[in-house]
Image 1 (cartoon, rainbow, N blue to C red):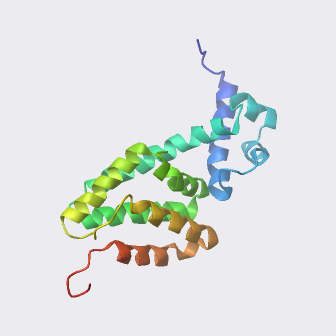
Image 2: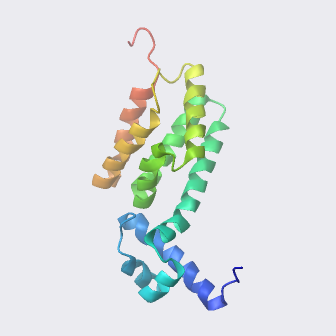
Image 3: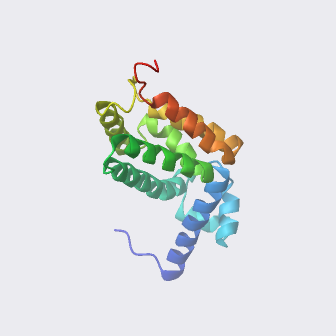
Length: 180
């Protein structure tokens, strides 16, 4: 049976998670764990006592990112206009990618069911926009190439994501017969 952590151990764990959020957002999921420990103000051994493997630490921070992304998708489904809901989800996703490399890497793995619930919600967003005639016909999961493409833009020049975002929106938007 797991016992609660001592106060100092809980404080160290919390500091490690907070530092990992910052460092991994800046450097990505492969950031050196020594940097995380230093930023948290603890020894590397303390990090490994709390998180024996890199994946344990990553899981601790990605769970919150997946939950926030899932909530964003839910909120986007509640937007009255289907196209605006889809645009809201995509814009916030691209914005998060521009400032958080760990989120970018997570978003690029979502097509592999890292975020299974997000996948289902996004499919509903797209289908809803298609039913309203706002989103053109697509095959498969059209959003993931959008997200993966933006990841490269965000990595190369985080300030350019909006330009890429608008270009990709144009590709998703339904064309009227005179535009085709």
